[in-house]
Length: 218
Image 1 (cartoon, rainbow, N blue to C red):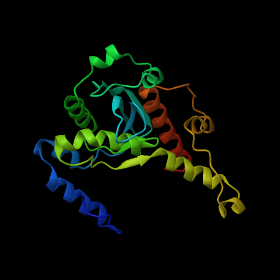
Image 2: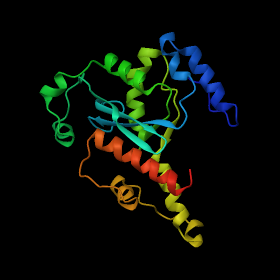
Image 3: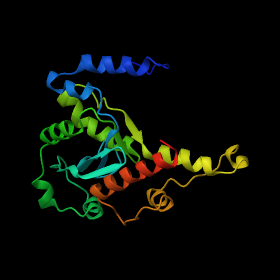
Image 4: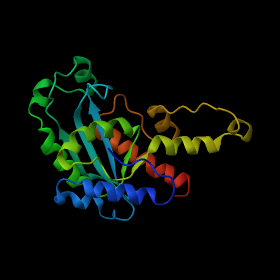
C-alpha cells in the first residue's frame, strides 16, 4: 500500500521517495529522473471495455510532445495479446481482428517498451485515469510500483478554460460544461473524427493540450 496523500509541498517528494524504494528492478530508476524540459508523452489506449476488474488493454499509442510541437514521427504503437476473450463489440469499435490481436505482444514486453519510451516525461491524456489504472495492473508486477510520472488531465485543463469563459453570474453557480471529447475538439478548432483510434486520439489530445496552454498563456 502506498503512503496516504499528504497535503503540502512535501507530498510529491515523499511519494516519489517511497516509490523509488519499492522499485523491484534498479534498471527502471530512469523513470524517476528529472524530466526533459517542456516535454510530455501523449497516451491513448484501446480497451476491451470500461470495467477495471474485467477488461484489458488491446492497444496503446504514445507520442512525444516538445514545447509547442507534436512529434508524431516519434511515437510508439503497441498491440497486446489478450489474456481473455475480447467482446465482439470491442473489436468492432476499435476496428481490430482477433487474428491481429493473437499476434500481439505479451504484456511484459509491451510494458517494457512503453516504459523505455516514456522515460520520466509527464503523461497527457483525456480521461486518462482509466487507461492508467489498466496499464498499472500490468506495470506493477514488472517494476513493483505504479507509474511515477505526473499525469496531466487535458479534460481538466479544458474545463478550467471553459469555466473562465462563463459570465460571472454563471461562475457562482453550478454551470454545466460539455466535456465530451468531440465537443472539446470542436471548441478548440481541431478536427473531429468518428471513432478515433489510439493514434488519432493521442495526436488530437496533444494538439488540444498545446492549444489550451496557448489560450491560458502557458
